[in-house]
Each structure stands twice: as structure tokens, then as C-alpha cells.
Amino acid sequence: MNPEARLAELGLELPAAPAVAGNYVPVVRTGNLLFCSGTICALNGAMTHTGQVGREQTVQTGYESARVCVLNALANLKAAAGSLDRVARVVMVSGYVNAVSGFADSPAVINGASDLLVAVFGDAGKHARAAVAVAGLPKNSTTEVQIVVELKD
Image 1 (cartoon, rainbow, N blue to C red):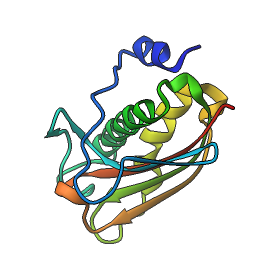
Image 2 (spheres, rainbow, N blue to C red; image 1 turned 45 degrees about the horizontal axis):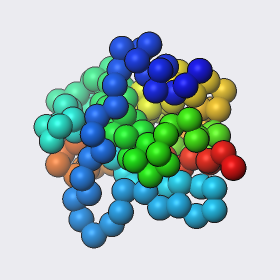
Image 3 (tube, rainbow, N blue to C red; image 1 turned 90 degrees about the horizontal axis):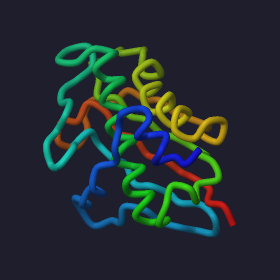
């Protein structure tokens, strides 16, 4: 099934590709790989989740935050590739969780990103991953996600 049709089936739609906030590009292509810069949980310029998991946010709201990050990353990937149909597989996800000191449940939060990618791409959405707790993220975002995908020839 077409990834964008799958998103619609899930009741989701891609936002406009977010503007960059510094001296970098949203996506870099090398060979058949697209490296997507980190995306935070903002929609239409407004933050959806701010603050640390374990303080202002819970594991569940962090999970939802990671889903928003993926939607932004997919919007950037679509802008770079022309269509999400061109994605052969998701290769790697690096997830960062703005969390209190000692927070040990980063994987449960970043599952929000991983679960959505598998729901959209099926087996091609299964990926290698890092899930790391950090002391802060841009704009006090609850999560940030970076994605690497392989394109079809």
C-alpha cells in the first residue's frame, strides 16, 4: 500500500515540510540513502509537546511527541524524494528524549516513532535505532528524531 494512503487510513496527514532553523539542509542524499536532519514536535510552527519526560511530560505524551517528529521527517523526505513511494526501507532512527536526569525509558518514548514507521511502511519500516535521553532539545521540544532511508532504484 502507498505510504501516504496508509497515513490517511491511520487518520494522519503530512504537515508542510518544516523550515530549517539554522545553517543546514533538511535532507542530504548520498547514493540511494537520504539522511533526514533532526525534526522536533512542531506542527504549523507551533510546538505540540514541550518540556521533559518525567517532569512536564509522561512516557505516553513523549510517545505522541515522537510521532509528530516522524510526520515532520516524512514531510521532509517526501519533499526530497518527490513521493514516499520511493522509500525502499527505513534504515536508521536516532531518537532523543528531553528527560529528567536518570530517565531510563527512552526506548518506550521513541517507540512512538518506530511504531508509526512500521505502521506506514510495514516490514520496510523496521529499522536500526538509538533512543537516548538528553537534558534539553531545541525549543524545549520533548523529542527529536533523525531518520535515514534507502530509496528504490
